[in-house]
Length: 498
Image (cartoon, rainbow, N blue to C red):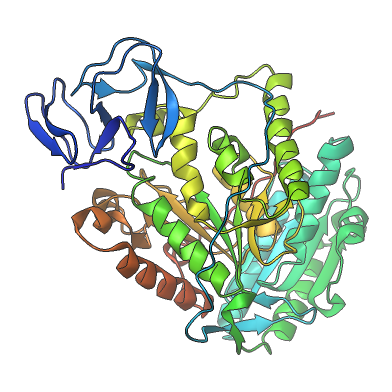
């Protein structure tokens, strides 16, 4: 298969391999098309003559309008297509009927760490969280000492990690509050066996502020240190880490049902195949997890623009629909208030890979959500409450969005990519390639290859394989980023810096 028409209503098709001008392509219900231009893999070409001003249809929806006449067989991209997006929009709730797949035919379990508050972790890690950037080097040094200690005594700890960030001081208002919420959410994450929170002592988001936002935590698993109060903060910090590591080393995995899983859904460095292979695959896996009673979280609000109506109509009631409308329009106002176009996207890498407009990107991106009903809308820094599909307020930026997913208490993030990235969130970040070339070239980054969908492998086969890999990860199998020692976090900075 050299080309793919995603929806019967589409007036463009996508090249699955590099095509040359003059080649004849046969499309069902269309007949032979002779290409007028070279078409790179992942890019689109016209299946019929499209007049200036007419919609470009992909995924059965408009991804923009033609800025000039486009003839059958011509390349369709940024040079002849413009977005159709605008700013604040009025939406009408038009709910769709979502058919359930029925009860799962077998019990699915994994072995996790049951925490005192009933949450379940898939890792037994010790995290060191600084309240402010001023102590970043201290927590990095402490992490090295903690890692050496846990290796020396062969403890039951997966890793000791310091999560540095540039904030926690000189912030005001909601911006300050959001940073504190994210740090508190991470400090109570079920993947943590123990947490050391390190402050300086004069910051405006001190240890006490983080502690006040930490709800339902086990005091035996958390330690606090203010560096200005210690004669030797390294010596004291190492003592506290040893206490945490020794205590948490008693933890053991126990069998729990798959409905205790919370999975984050994210994409980054997408290409023209992301919406054909990797993202639809995640949609199938997401539906399967939700059918088992698990939670899935979709974020990247700006990458819902152009596809938001499809998600809105899956909201389980009108109250939730209104909450989602507020989320979408709030993010559009955020762009406008900062003098930015809402369609300042896709990225240069996305465009090189074949994605033309934000609608094009969004319609591919949101396929990660599958077909399940939307049951929850989460604010930035808010933790998961409802089992099923939840939508989370966060930007498209990979580190910021993935940190928000972890703060919502996702234990694992499924991350699709067409161009590749070594990035890792605070929780295991499984990289799923949209194409074979990336999977073969960057096997040290990629955990799973969805590109084989274009080689004849069925979506059912790949769904089964990826689902089993997720369960293996929940049981303790490390993903590529973990084996490389990669862990990152980032905070969504929206306010004034003093």
